[in-house]
Image (cartoon, rainbow, N blue to C red; front, side, top):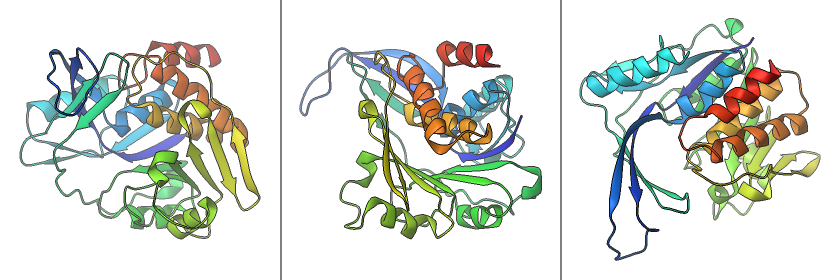
Length: 281
């Protein structure tokens, strides 16, 4: 078992199932499917919990009924929430509009400022994962680099993400830089970067390093709901690396986690992944 810190969002997702795909100027009927646990913290963290790791979530929720519900749901499912902070005010819901073909459109409010406290003693942790715009993330990463594995998602802007492993989807890179993928990743993550993993959906993923680019195949799956698939992929990658696998083998494990996520009707990982991990353990 590894000790893992996740700096990532914890969301209350409100699911609206549409009667047809979204088009500009269209009119739609929807079915309100209620709320469900979501956000990168839960979507990545639960799979890691099921894989036998201790996962401490660093996030922020409001002091309201929705915030209480999020913490209760997360804690009940095994996430360590003692580092989740509470802000005065309400916790806004994320609106997920799901079309019949499994595609989703996300509408979310502007998030309030989230400032991280002083970093923990990294000697007690095996990995840090950052998927958040929280103030202080760079400081946390820099202090962790010499003590544990640091994995980070590429931000929506070009802010620094010091890490050993940088993650991004191919769509995240569109129009971002004229540099090669590896040179761009180095400009974001710094010289300690070991690999840049770029996902391509059904086309697999690319492992970029100073040695070149290696393509890792995807795992075929029926698309039911692709919400949280990238987060599940990150969890599988972290689990593979902490299990001592090579980067290529860890990416193959991540592909399995991602495939099971898209085949599940939820944001967080579902029964397919839990059964798989129970059998593996």
